[in-house]
Image 1: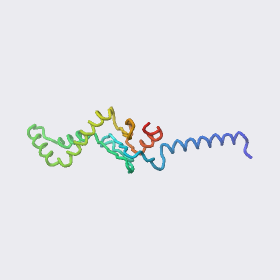
Image 2: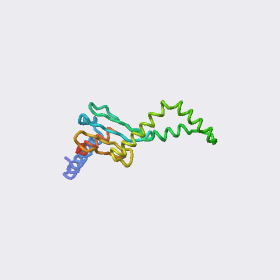
Image 3: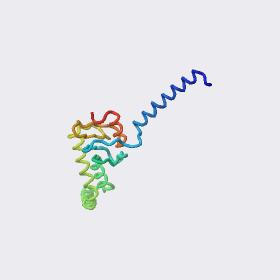
Image 4: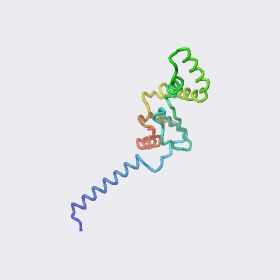
Length: 161
């Protein structure tokens, strides 16, 4: 037979384990709870901080905005240009024509994403994940790029409320 203080200690330890498992199930559940149909999730990030954990949720639209497309295009077009300004302009122009099908979408996504982040969602930093749930004000999770983890956090906070 175990001494009473040992049994009490085990009871406290068991309670702590149950609390820890409950907390972990909020942070790391086996599946993401379904969001309301018509919800849009927007992820604002850059190519060096890619969005991860993007689930396939029925009735939920997930849009990833890479905000650094303009910088990437500029770096691509100006890489290893000569010092002569006229020659550099000619080479950059030729590169743009050649690379336009690849870099134009990056530039457009970045410009549209930046305008959307600043003027529609009022974001002031990234990475950020914005939840647009029908009938509710948008909610923002800053500093995360794991969409599934952000959804779990929103669920733990009580969703869009």
